[in-house]
Image (cartoon, rainbow, N blue to C red; front, side):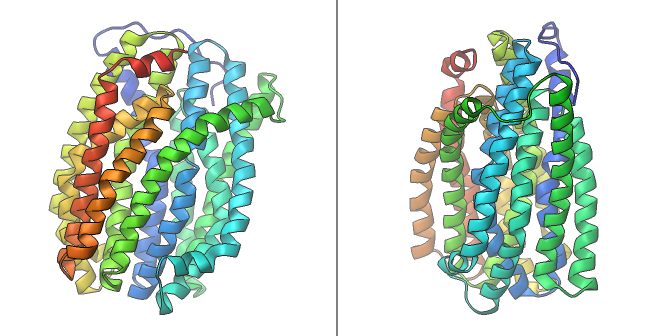
Length: 451
């Protein structure tokens, strides 16, 4: 975490904004994929225990990541707040905003962890799980609750660093955490025979190790710049106000994902297990594409904080081109790898066959996803949270009827999973592309970000 940050934007020269984007996006890529790598590792390790275990973890993960996803505003509101303060030349105010974000993360995390542990069984029942799948889902969900607090602290900590234009430190922390997660899961799942419980416990321990690093860094830098460690409740309330719109935006996304899980659960254990693997891979690719969105949050926030709307527009255009192009590349790679990807996670032939079909559909939608994630980051960096929330509700209204068609009229077996993924990765993502693209073409978001 840097001790000081210049408020002066670099000169607008040919290629300078491209270097700035890469300086933030490349390390952010490694840091962002830490969480989906946790899921990929968990899925690979648990997948070899059996279909019921994999389906149970998939169901529990959907519930868990609904809670975690709703709290992502801790990073998304902290990053632009810190970045705008940096653009104005106030490092003390930037660190104070980060401190308040950490306190808010701790308070929310403790409440959610207790509630999640108590409500694990009814939540899983609500998702329609039965038998062994239900039992494994409850175990995984309950023992993931300690790590939930850590994940929220990680969100806030990384938000501080991104706002200060530092994405390298989160990369180091994420890499170490990923390595620790794999080692712990192998020992606890296979060495001690703890099954899905071992996977959840191992991931929680790794997440707390990562959170501890951020807590120490925030504390040291706050003291160095004379920023009190106790929270400013006015600052927390202001962050909560912005966060409430971002939470609504994220809630619409999570409802879409949960509704998708409800539909696939009705298609049987094979499709549910295949969907879990496909969604895990989607999350991995989404976070990879989101590296540009993180760069957008930090850079757009800084430039609008410095009232440099011309450079903000140039940065946006460059990142849109890169995001779409990167989506084309990841789509091609995924299409080629799809027939062999299933072998990494499960020996079940039916699951592997259905997964291949779902991944081909996902590959087609990758350029749309790249466009969507970049514009999402641009508007978050500009503080355009209210529009993002309203657009999220509109997108959900478009998507839910598509899901209903799949539920009532979709074919059986693997073909039903194809229909489901076509509705999600093409229909839903295209709706998001339209609503975000229309906003980005206006100047309203830049006016908001300059306030």
